[in-house]
Image 1 (tube, rainbow, N blue to C red):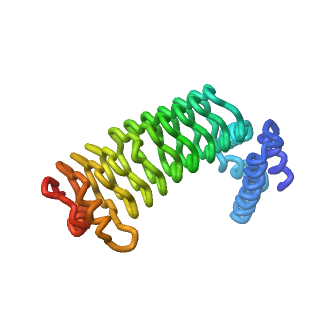
Image 2: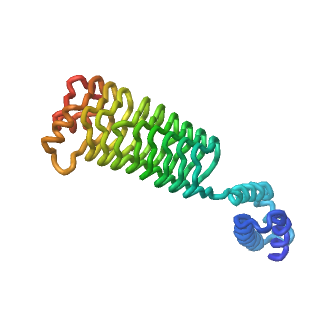
Length: 288
């Protein structure tokens, strides 16, 4: 009877020979059917009845096999895009899908990535000045140690994106929710952030001097070891935000904290207490 079960499955799976995931599914299913057949025989069923009941127990397996095959074929067709060390100035990549694409050490100045899905891609050490990433999906992308001056990130998807040690002079982030994004050791004094939500973002050891964060939202953000001279948080919302100094609160850091404008800001009690202890002017802050 095992041979009969195997013959039945061979017929069902015949159109999908050679697809690894389907072959694995077939092997697992055969083992399950054999076990089910043995159970039915132990209950006193004859061979033919046990066989029919075993086959009926798996329902419309052909539809499941087809779905698995379609997914596998789709994945097999995906080709890793490798455009590293290429001269691609002002290239048109709008709307492309390039998961885990490799754009390292490339000349991409002025290129258009509008609406592209670049999940998991790397641009390390590339020149992406004046590039457009508007609406692009940059989840898990590596944009560290490169020149991103005057690039545009309007409504981009930024999740776990790494901008550490990059040049962001004139780069503009508009209407973006930044989730677990890293800006460590980055000069952001000339970067523009407008109507953004910062969730779990890290600015460790970066220079934010003079930045305007008015009206924006900060949740679980770390400004640890960060230069914050003359930064403005007017009307901003701050929840569970950290402002830790290098090692101890030096006179220089005290002076820096006192230059920050929090007028009209809303913050939780712990953030308020930490800033108050550092000497920040919180006279026009609302605590919630």
